[in-house]
Image 1 (cartoon, one colour):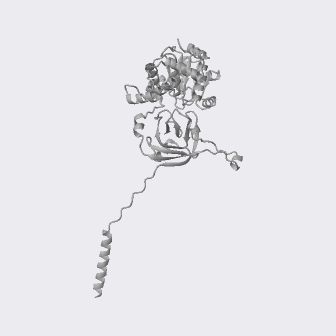
Image 2: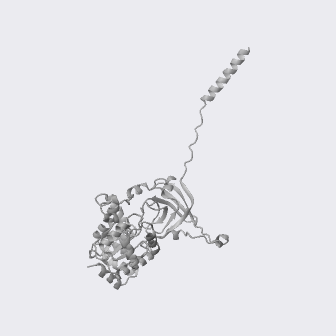
Amino acid sequence: MKMRKIAAALLSLLMTFTLASCKKEEPKPDPEPVVPSITDYAVEHEPEFGGVYIKITIDDFNKLGFAFGDSVDVEFSTGYKLEDLPYYNGYYVDAGEPLLIGYPGYDYIKAAINYGEDLWDEANLKLSSDSGLWSTADLEEHSTASIRLREKGKYLDIQNARDIQYSDDRTKYTTDEEFANFRNMTVGDLKEGVVYRSASPCDNQHNRAPYVDRLIEQAGVNFILNLADNEKKIDGYIAKEGFDSPYFLSLYENGKVNPIAMNMNYASEDFTKKLVNGLVSIAEHEGPYLIHCTEGKDRTGFVCMLLEALAGASYEEIVDDYMLTYDNYYKITKEKDPAKYDVILDKNLNAMLKEVIGDKNADLTKVDLEAAAKQYLMNAGMTAEQIEKLLVRITE
């Protein structure tokens, strides 16, 4: 009897174990995906291109799960919002459109309006003016920014189509001129050996300044129009260890460098005011002349395009000179990469020319570019006499 009870208990235990082991486990729900975001990061004004640095490095930002081609929402502590913003590694939006950019060489990611208003002012990013101990102690408090992923890869097709990067390694280039983006402008009626354009001969962030310096010395450049810097920035370059641009320094110390610190909003009054200042200074000095910004690409591209048009160059001549920069830096030509070539031409140079003409629908091959350039400069504040004096300096 006792043995039967023991056997029954064992059988019951075995059945319980069997049933428990056969019972299906409920599937665990997938964890909610973590949406990449940053909150309340310090910001810093970047006045040269009119943007706002958000103080996280590009690498650290991308390690959080962001990638070029994503759509993001940006909100500043002032309440200003930018929604559905493309995040690119280049300025791949039309003039006047906002973007978040991680440009190679930048210390941080940056929110900006391409060729547009200064986002710092647009977003009202001011220092705190609160009263009390904070103010009494003369402390500074900056606004902050928060970013959240909106849609993964929404703009990836544009990122892939327009992605262009260049090297700062001299050995990757055939000649010093190519590396320095240095050339003599000879289209239209421009005098040979009078007007040159290049990357910066003083700002060495791209390792090009010493090469430009040697080339402008060989060319006998006597006056420099520096579109990118002010005197404070130039003095900072000179003070850096390893500064190696002695010819530039000699011109600078002799008052033959005009640093006008232009932004890139070529539709703004500030841009045109500084442009007039720069061109008048050329007319007042003996050449040869160098025109440069940082890379010799955007601001230099606008000013040189304008001078070429003023000197009677055709649309095709202006295009060839402008796009040579993209051949020098990126090996993009009409033959090698027609898709990128056409996009750059349309979004950059053509947009600039249409701003000069004052007609966004103009057929650039049929416009009198010389007359348009003269009228543009007169509208900007140059007199007919100043324009004529400039032309005497630079044309045959």
